[in-house]
Every structure is written in C-alpha cells, then in structure tokens.
Picture 1 (cartoon, rainbow, N blue to C red):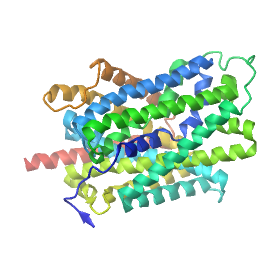
Picture 2 (tube, helix red, strand yellow):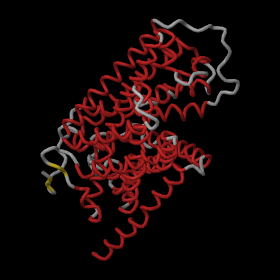
Picture 3 (cartoon, rainbow, N blue to C red):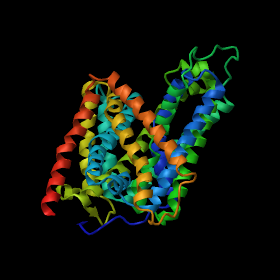
Picture 4 (cartoon, helix red, strand yellow):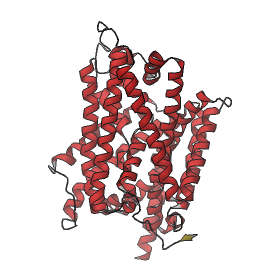
Length: 446
C-alpha cells in the first residue's frame, strides 16, 4: 500500500551502510584497472603508492560528506545539499541528471559487466550479455520494490560474497603464485602518475552514495561518520591487499601486459578452474554494485517528487515495504532503456562510461562547493561533525573533482561522435526546459 504521508524510517545499521559503500565501490574496476595503473607507474612502490593515495583522496571526500550528511540527513543526498546551497533550479537539474544519466547510466554499466562475465560462464546466444544485463536490472529492482529488508539483505549477501572472493584471490597471489623474475624490465618507459591516479579514483568511486540513505540510518548524526570511514577504510585495505597479491604474482610488467589480472593470476596458480572462479567472482561483484546503485539511486528521485509537483508520483513512499516504489520502477525502466542503447552499439560498457562521466564529476564538484556555501549561509546550523582542517580539506576535494572533470571531458571529446557521449549531453540538456517550467509554475504561485 502506498501512503503519500509515509517517509523513510531510520532502520539501517552502520554495517548495512558499510555494506552498501563496499558493494558500490568494489565493482568490476579492481579486476581491470590494476593493469592500466601498472602501465602508468613503472615500479612496484609507485604502483602501491597511488592505490594508497586513492584511499586518502576518498577519505578527504568522505570527511566533507560526513559533515553534510550529519548536518542535513535527507533521502535526497547531494540533491538536498544543492537545493540548500544553490537553489531549486540547479538542484532540479541534478536530480534530473541523476535519474536519467548518472545513476541509471551507472546501473546499466554495471549490469553490462555482470552480463559480459555471466555470458562467459553460461552463454545463451549472440546477445547474451544484454540479456543478462536486463535480467539483473529487472530482478534487483523487483527485490528492492518488495521492501527495504529484501534490498539490504541482498546487498549484505552479495557484498560478503565479493569480499570473501577477493580475499581468496589475495591469498592465492600471496601464498600460491610463483613470483615473477626480478630481472623483468620496467612496465612503462614513460610513466604517467596523473593518468594512473585517474584509473585509481575511478576504481574508488561510489562511496558518496551513503549520503542517499542518511535518512534511513539509525542515529545518523553519530553513525554517518563511522559508516563512511569504515566503508572507505575497508575498501582501501582490500584494494591494497589485492594489489599486493597482483604485484607479487605477476609483477608490474606482467600486470601491464595483462587484460585480466585476476584471471591471469589465478590461472597461473590454479589452472583453468581458477580463471572460471574469477569470472564468477566478477559477475557477483558487478551484481552487488548494481543492487547498491539501484537501492541508493531511487532515493534522489523520491526527493525530487517530494519537492516538485510536476514529478509528484515519484515522491510516494510505500509504507509497508519502506521503499520509494514508484521511483524504483521509473529508475528501472530508464536503466533498461540504457541497456538497450548500449546493446545497440555492441559496446555497452564503453558507451555508458562516455554517457555518465562528465555529468557525474560536474555535480560532484558542486556538492563539494556546497560545503563552503552552507558554512557561510547557515553558520548556526547544528553540525555534529565538522570536517577537520577546514577549509583545506574541502578545497583539496574540490581540486580533485576539477581534475577528474577535465579528464572525463577530454575522454568525452575524444569520443565526440559516439552514441553514448552525444546521448548523455542531449538527455542532460532535455532537463533544462523542465527546470524552467518548474520555475515558471512557482513564480505563478507566488
């Protein structure tokens, strides 16, 4: 039963939010980007250093988000910070972009990763990847519509499975794999530290999704800091351990030459069975990240519906299930359309990267700037947690966002004639008339 007056309830524990953070951040990147990082570092020490720095940068961002989420707990997350700092029009455009580009594009991208590896384990025809991707979106959306308990337990199980699997990969690399020859040449004659950091930060991406469940976290003013720091700490530790195993088993040169570092590591140590295990592990990992993205993504659409009459149908909370059912269903339909778009290009993952990246980093930067604005415009607001070393800490976060925005724009320009890049821009701009319509209606009422 849907109740317009129903609202999110604080029923999630710290461990549930940590599972969401770990589930989103540890997607498929850790199985692919280490080879790209190795090719742009040139030494084992530098290789491990950039992964450590990735954790530090994420920690800096998490401290900023901890202040915002503790001071302004809301299902809208970034959307709520933007509406308070920059006004309704810009916040509306962000919610539109998240519903149609950022989050749904990420869901489709992760679903394609699941589809690619599931198709390798159990082929079902020429479009197997797309079929599996669509099935993942449908099944996981249905589970979350059924209720928050089903959604969170699905996430907890998938996160536990992927963490255990990664720890097994690390154990094999550290204790079973033979070390490569120390005489191997350097991985790259011209290391590019900045490019390596781009790949690392992409692999760390997604921890900010915790902000979207702040209204559902028990004792949020105290526990949000714990959840963010615990989640990022766990991810950083896992990444360092797994990459140390890659380094020991394959070496920097071996990683740089590998298209599938985890598969190559386990194939060398355990044979064909090890490679099959990695395929299943990556599929489970991508599935967990997809579910977490579905869980958090619908919260922004719900907040949009609560604030703007034009999208009122999205702002209904199903009281019995404790879920934003309408928002979940609309998000699922858009995600399926994007899976179909990716399938039409035959390069689903790459299409979705071009579709989402520039828009994501632009609004991520604005979320960081909102901390400065709200410190000035609402100086008396209760802040149970204050970011340390202000304003240096949020400034470093914003500088990182500018750097990543520039890099993603450069990538989009290089893909200027791709379907994904063009479609992402068009869909974002399509939200502008809606934003103007909303403003016109509000002016008429006033």
